Image (cartoon, rainbow, N blue to C red; front, side, top):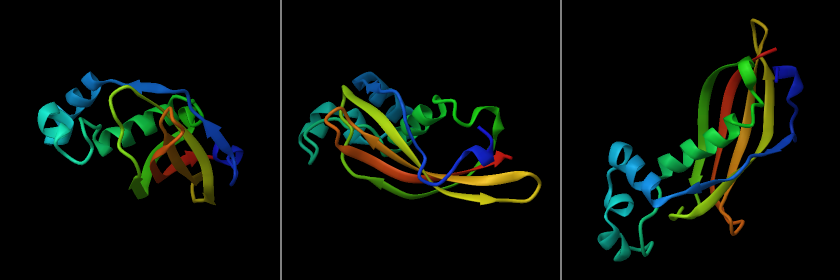
Length: 141
């Protein structure tokens, strides 16, 4: 979609994706090697009572789901900011995640571009919000 096709209040819903224990440990081994993502025995003794996904993985999955809607298409130029990131509930193995995306701001820029800011709200299969954050991208007009 081009910039002028986005409007404040517009809402998109993504498909769902299941987060496996293997994806959690694989991601964490490379990008966030902390015990709560890798060591099942130690994680069971912690406050989450088991392995949880990295917040960074949750951001990546939320963004992936949004991009896969195809809403930006080839009109996206680049991301410019992520703000107000909140990890609300842990993501556990076998959680099914989906993201609700709401356009919260549009701003026309120079050179036939515009800035689109969306609120990503990610939910598990119990319809509990697990993540929320604002994402701004530059889009062709």
